[in-house]
Structure formats: structure tokens, C-alpha cells
Image (cartoon, rainbow, N blue to C red; front, side, top):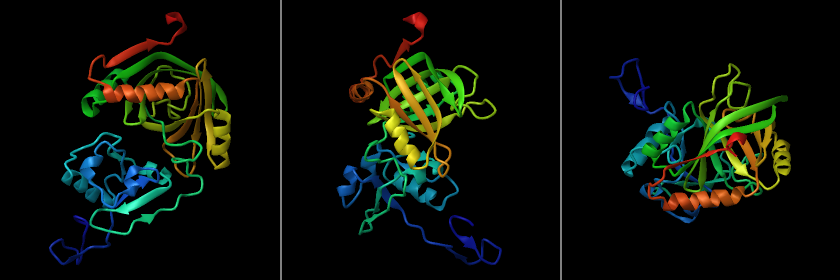
Length: 292
């Protein structure tokens, strides 16, 4: 196969024929303002979240070329994220064909889809595990103009991971991109946790998608009723969290978070990020008892 075509007769110089035709669609959540539009200007979507198939998929090249033609050379992980493992999880999409096509069509949601859950609502957070928090924050600031950042040092969670009692300590950086909270997690102890693999190595990269909920127990019950499995439940004085796995969509976990004032904190962070002038890019809060 070369440039999307298969060479016939064993030589690239012989007649070549496309093995199939592929079609690109513009997909958006059903509550997105894009759903109401008949045509989409990709140049106006440079800050919107997109998920594309990675290299090796037939549609990857066309996706890349479409964005380059729109003047987007490379977007952030929220504007352009090659994550095939995420794709099956995005539910309730309305697929609109690109501007040169007509007749939008609906893609039916799968049973158990939660990305646009009527109770959980839209995603509140994307969480990443990082090897070096300070370097990762600096990279996000330079590459994605993300800020300001609030860094919480010495965060502690006590709970159960895969049925065993655990304590996890970490440093956490929070910032905002559009309406999403971005969480960077650097785990600072070596014990078993949902942030390390079975060999104890950090699960670096995109780790989870999260929702803030008013009743964690009710949210967990709803998700487990849909087939997800709780792998981690923990708390500290200000927060309760639960991580769940979906056996059909491995690789990125689902988190639900309950905490007093959490929604107000996110709303304040979103507003602050939109008005940010670049000053005071990193604020540090030490949560250890010794710092209290």
C-alpha cells in the first residue's frame, strides 16, 4: 500500500487502485453549537476538542491535511488528540459531513455511554500522569499557552485500590482550557495505585476523564450498573474520588469526584483562565499538615 493505494502486479509502477473509499465527518456532542450549523469552518474550531485516529489509520492523513488547510498546524491535546482508545467512548455524537457534503446523519449512542450522560453532564476534567510536574507545566505553558496553574504539593489520598488498602501521595497541577480542567499528576510515593502499572512504573500520559458529582455513591452505582468496575476509591479531608474501568474501552479510566465547593472552584478557574494576561503563571499551595 502506498499513499492510500495498493500496487497491482507486485510493482509500484504498475496500475494502482484504491482499495476503498473513506469519508470524513465532523462529529460534535448533541448539545454543541456546531450541531445547528450547516457548514463548519475548521479555522474557527482551532480551540475546540478533537479526537483523531492515529497514524496507521486511513483517515489520519485526511484529518491532518484538513486541519493544515484550515491554518491549524498543530493543536494542543484538546484541539488535536490522536487517541484511538478514546474513540469508542465518545457517545451521542451528531456526525455532520464536511462542508462539501450534505444531509447530516446521527450516530446512535452505545448502551452504557457516559461522555454526555444526562446525569453526569459534560466532562469536567482531563487527567494526565507525568514524570516531572514542573517540566510538564512549563511545556504546557509554552506549547499550549495554558495557565495560570495552581500546584498542590503533598496531596494525600487514603483508600482502596483493587481491594487493598493504599495511601497515595502526589503533587497536582491544575489549569483550564476552554471549559475543561486540566490535571497533571506526579505520584510521589512508590506503593500500588491507579497511577502506576503492575511493575510500579508511572502510567504516563492521558490517564482519565472525570466528572464532578454531587453524590459520589449514586454516580458510582449508575456507572457500575452500566458495566464499569470500581478499581480505586479514596478520600482526603476535602475530596472523595472513585476510578472505574470499562473492560470494553481499556486505557483511559473514568473518575468521579465529590467535594464541597468543587463546581465553584472550576467555574472560577475557567473565568480566570479566560482573563489571564500571563502574570503569576504558577501558584503553589502546600497541603501537608506541617504547612497548615
